[in-house]
Length: 380
Image (tube, rainbow, N blue to C red; front, side, top):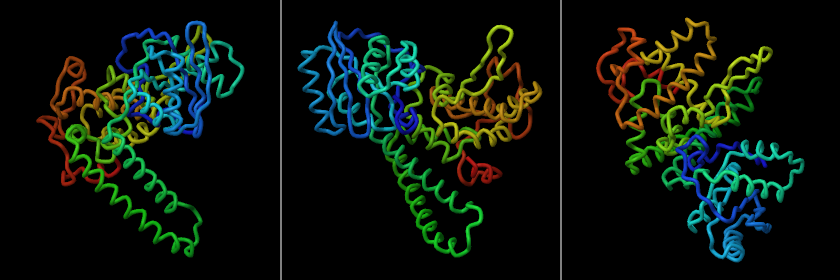
């Protein structure tokens, strides 16, 4: 059931188990759709009935799917379940949502384990579609999928295009053993790619100014010490509406930053590690900001020092700070208040923030002219 691309590529619209719990909905029919690049394998389960069909993954195929559903369900409620398949599911999910259907886009990992729990040994599109239908019927409380807003979809496309171009430039500039003759050929290509990045930056800024909600969230994120422009827009693009999560811990789980333990009895004691079952793009975006925050954010610096005193390794500390930074992002957006260096709560009072480094006063939003932080902002 896994398709090309990560299960989290559709992050703004993906609703998983860590979002606020949905009200269970009992539907007489459950439709599973196994989405591929060119085809849709559909399986409709009713009360003792089962219907299958294969349709093209095109607008014409979507309309045929709607007519097929009306024929077999007599317009009764249907629970529609699809996997996140790297973007191939977006078009059909958006169409069905616009038709008023209850669409659930689920994590392929959970569906795979569900199939294994039933000792399913066959892997075909038809079997996968039936498994999705069974999964939807067994989980009536799945959170309904909401499509990303046009602004969120555009921001994600712009940010991902920018990241792809930056990676291409990095690969060419750091390729070992490249002859000077080849570098001369690359020079105009690199200049063209850098010009494209500058143009994408202008479009991103224009979109933030034209969309009040995105612009306000961007301003709040930039108030956090350690988060720069690239990190802020990546969080907004890959996380979508971050307020939809039930808690900061749920957001950390979405990014794959929750701790995975492995202990059993007296013989199994695996080393705790990050689960990494989440958005790799978010984890990548938070790595360097966490290192910056460990030095310049007084709260996170004190947190990192406590972990070091307990004997944690460097990478364990960085992973924990990444998680704390993301939980801080959730708190800032949830309250609508910018980051405050002098903030105190019962938990922080047990671990006072060290004096110095301007540890008092409200931290204003950082700009490109903030003294002393330009170089450290660059890595974020």
